[in-house]
Amino acid sequence: MNPHDMARLGISEGDSVDINSASGRISAIAASDAAVRTGVVSMSHNWGHLGNDPADYQQYGASTNFLTRADVGCESINAMPRMSAIPVNVSLRPAAGAAVSGPEV
Image 1 (cartoon, rainbow, N blue to C red):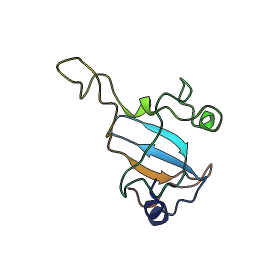
Image 2: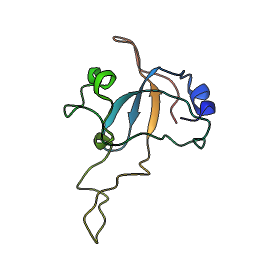
Image 3: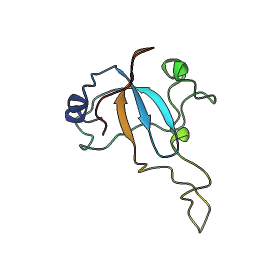
């Protein structure tokens, strides 16, 4: 993420975050990169565990597949689902048992 976005959201390098889309949610570890445009989240594809257990992302990574759906937004010419430019909200992952609050991207 862009460091300015992270600062605005109260997220620091290495913090656990939740990434939410209209189709799903994943947990990940925040990293800053000044080369990433403000308002954009960049994330590697094809990582993560099949179960999408939030506890597994530290060991296996986070699967961006859980942010998409195969039955919505598919290309009519080849039935390919949307795999990039997915609108998301990022928030600091609350500690276990804590109430969820705070701004989102």
